[in-house]
Image 1 (cartoon, each protein chain N blue to C red):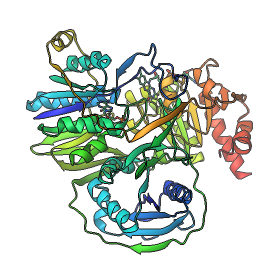
Image 2 (cartoon, rainbow over the protein chains, first blue to last red):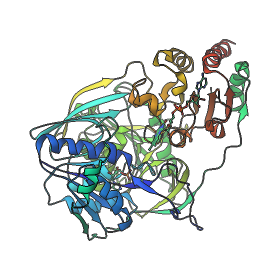
Image 3 (cartoon, each protein chain N blue to C red):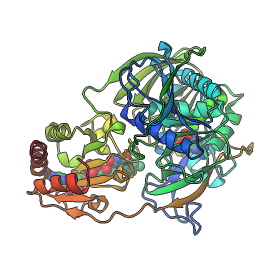
Image 4 (cartoon, rainbow over the protein chains, first blue to last red):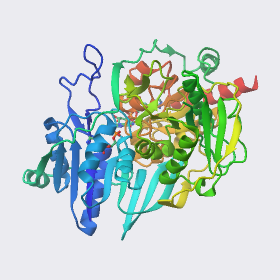
Length: 246
Length: 316
Ligand SMILES: Cc1cc2nc3c(=O)[nH]c(=O)nc-3n(C[C@H](O)[C@H](O)[C@H](O)COP(=O)(O)OP(=O)(O)OC[C@H]3O[C@@H](n4cnc5c(N)ncnc54)[C@H](O)[C@@H]3O)c2cc1C
Ligand SMILES: Nc1ncnc2c1ncn2[C@@H]1O[C@H](COP(=O)(O)O)[C@@H](O)[C@H]1O
């Protein structure tokens, strides 16, 4: 059975956050991008495990510019069979979902994986939109996935626990921690990735529904008040009276 | 047009965060002279204080099929209310429920979607965190319907009297797509994303057996417990307690970080907390730069005496 894994990119976690002069876009000058950890560590690996157990192919898709190709190749090195890149700079979730939906519509993917969220924007928006556009069931924040014939049993993170649900395939699943164990690309994988197909797909040019008016850095903290370790009474007083946090 | 708030509840009481939703919806609607509709799905015996938090109408679909969240059924129920009451905009919680239905609802309503809003709109512009909380982003949705999720603890619930007229509806619902097999609840825990106070500990704890002092402090404060990633990765604490860039992002009123160095990836999930207290034996720990109050000391001494000081304060 074939699966599709949606891959997003995000600034490396230690990257400096700065914005262009008018504050409407992120200044990516000199910033390294990485594969979104939820996509790489959990979604992709679980898809590869399914292929290893049941056969079929793992395809990855990314909506973004050619500079992402190096990251897509990494997904191939970890074990995906083929990659597709929709050639557009889409930054908004609706646009991204529309491009992926247009691509996946007539293909027979039994599971479409996304990550839980892209860690730069913490959006968690693409997966549900994609499910809506493809009219498929959606299971969010999966930390366990077992496939049995035409159905899947999925554990999903909820507040204070896990809910286990059963759902008919095909399905859109967003991957949370616990779904799989991270894998590292080995030398053989990296060599093989060079021969695997990476196809550029023309965008449908879906339009954005939301635009960024501006970005802003949050106001700086006013500085830390130190309290002596043997004076917790004072800390409690500050928390109660000054911070009103108790 | 009226603004809808989807109420979350456990069958008995309305979740505290849902008062934030109704009050937000009422204040947003009021910007164009309109009112809020609280939508209650599934069985709930007591509507609590929805009216006094701004619900002009409480539309209740008490169908027991809605006792569990099935995205398709929830969206269908919400669409029925939107059509019946001419509502365009919907406010959902930034919770597992909110995020599992928002996308499908957005597509079904031909709406725009923004998650994680943390302020009331100003001139049609909505604010949320970006770059893992290291920046703020202001979004302008295109004209037309909008679905948002509201970050908990960011816009306080405000008392505002409204009629709270209860309207029962029973629209036809489609079959469920997800069948619930079981729920594994973590006992006695306050769910982290809901908590207004969080006590969090890291590798400085040395051993999972030492967590008693953390749990005592949390119990005294009625706080949820959290941890840094290596602590969850090594199985010292359950995965769902892991906060940070790759864990849960939270913004409680009070975050107490104990034996956590304050790596940038950890800060990303907690730096929107209102008040941050850091307890660390290393005065150079980077976390102090993000703290409001700091204590340099051995956590094995400081934490029990903090717990005692809170007890004393409560009794005085
Ligand atoms: C892609 C990526 C994503 C990541 N995501 C996350 C994330 O989401 N969340 C997260 O937490 N981390 C994340 N990390 C890991 C992060 O970089 C740090 O390694 C981690 O946060 C460190 O955890 P810690 O503070 O518990 O441990 P340490 O860094 O080892 O710090 C322990 C602290 O305890 C103090 N200490 C020791 N003994 C005592 C004592 N007796 N009394 C008082 N203080 C004491 C020490 O001074 C030290 O500051 C991520 C890393 C990467 C690369
Ligand atoms: N540009 C993109 N191309 C492909 N997949 C994406 C893209 N952006 C987001 N996704 C997928 O959607 C998930 C959630 O992303 P987000 O809604 O941006 O938080 C990611 O983990 C990816 O799986």
